[in-house]
Length: 287
Image (cartoon, one colour):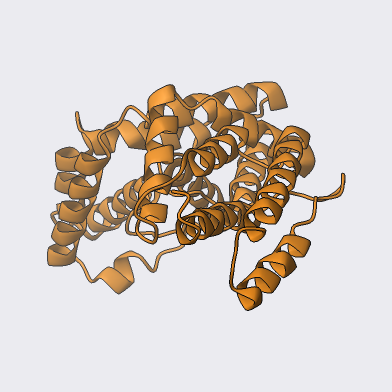
């Protein structure tokens, strides 16, 4: 899943546009609704607290890569503590009030100096607070954008990817459990109950986060177990046509090479193969 950037939901952009509008109104000598909106929504509020995260990036001077990484990590950890429901409600109400005083296409049509960095930070924050599995490349690319802005130098993408994955692995236990429960619920929409084997597969994929040697080894071990189980169960199938099909399926189970990455498709394959074995056992009156 990829996070779609939205100016309407980006706290950093909302604040910058309001300040710009307030300045324009003041220069015209007119009362500025933008000033009232800033006071109402960015003072002692969740929205104001979140803006401080954006401000800590935009106002930072040239930093070392280590210091920049520390700032980004702190921002993401802090964002977990915010009330996401309250933030969504405040943004919705703010946009509704902006719409009353200004034309939205003109208000959001203004160019933002640090648009790229603000958009990158929004994507990272939303990605690290999302229950869905987010595209790793998108997270890496946006973190690279922020690091290059903060350090004023080019960044090695491969190193950033490793750091992003490590950060994901530091999620607290409750968030890991929640992620597991979400995946479990989705799979249960198709299959009423997961077997212990299927639950083990899900847990291993979640804990490993990305394709690693240990995850590949786990996958290959399960593939071999599945081949043995299919071969064993095929012997008890009385229908010849079904037996041949199961034997052919068994031949499709192949281990991954040492350079292969374990993908989401591999996860689905394991879960479905275990479901197939359960169905065969039921048909053979063994369950």
